[in-house]
Length: 182
Image: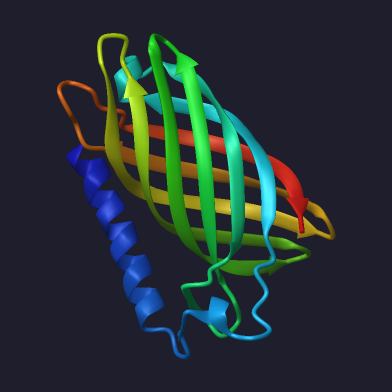
């Protein structure tokens, strides 16, 4: 897992340094008049490979709410904040995660965009013996499509957790989403 942590650290460092060097970053743009959140809400479903579940592949489902970031923003509004709630209950493991992920996005045309960013969260994990609330961190890359009210996307996410009393929930997930733009 040292390799996985190293790769995650490199991705996070690149995103932070690239974003920090961007010209014209605005802080607290959500307080500016005329700022548009452009929110989207989607249901999610996918597959997860979790260390706590003996590396079995589990079904994961939940909700994704994303919007233009109101805390820090580029001049062309390329930072979107994703808030996800995901749940799995297979292979003797139950887990519910609450994840926050600001992502730098690039439009690629025709309503498509790609983005990447860090993930911070909290996971309530139950391994069948004990349940604990665990701090989580990781990285995500994703592709999204927006056209009118239609929204869909695909995320590949790595999430690591702290370990408490032999409960952990390190995992990879591939999650599809479909929903609406407001």
